[in-house]
Amino acid sequence: MPESPADLDAAVALLGDVSGRHVVDLGCTEPALGRRLLDGGAGGYAGLARDEATLAAARDALRGTPARLSAQDLDRFDGVGLGRFDAAVSLRALGGVRNLARLLDTLFHHLRPGARLVISVRHPAATAGGYFDEGHRRFDTYVRELGHSGFGLVELAELGRDGRPEWLVLRGRRRD
Image 1: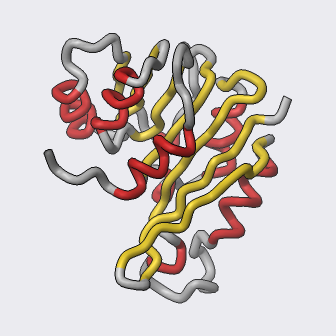
Image 2: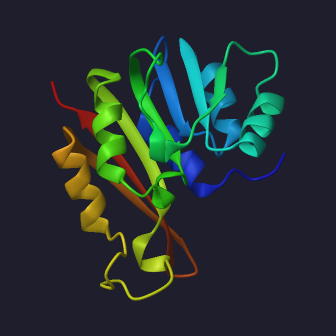
């Protein structure tokens, strides 16, 4: 069995017990996540794949499960017809979203009060360019956007290899 990516394991740990919870996955970049959540007792899983290739991989990985899957451009995400969820997760998909604030605002309205949001992104210190360059999404940008959109930061994990940062995994909670 291949080793799980470190951010996948961290995200599952930060999501906690998903028994009976309905979870939405923004990006659907790690099809193994959907299976792990459903095997862990999730009451429902909706994967919003960022493109058709990702959708095909997710369909293959989740064949025979009750997962609901669709392709969704996260820059145009409006949540219409999506429903409400107890938790949301996104692995490696939000770093490329142009308007993170708009996406988080929309997501807020599709999560029940107290819902968990877990995201992983390439660690800002590991991305190309200068950390303080204009347009570079820094660690404080994620924290600020979460707060402005109605999420409180609860916990984070910084993951790396060989002394270098690799992933930033954040857990927020939707405020009531």
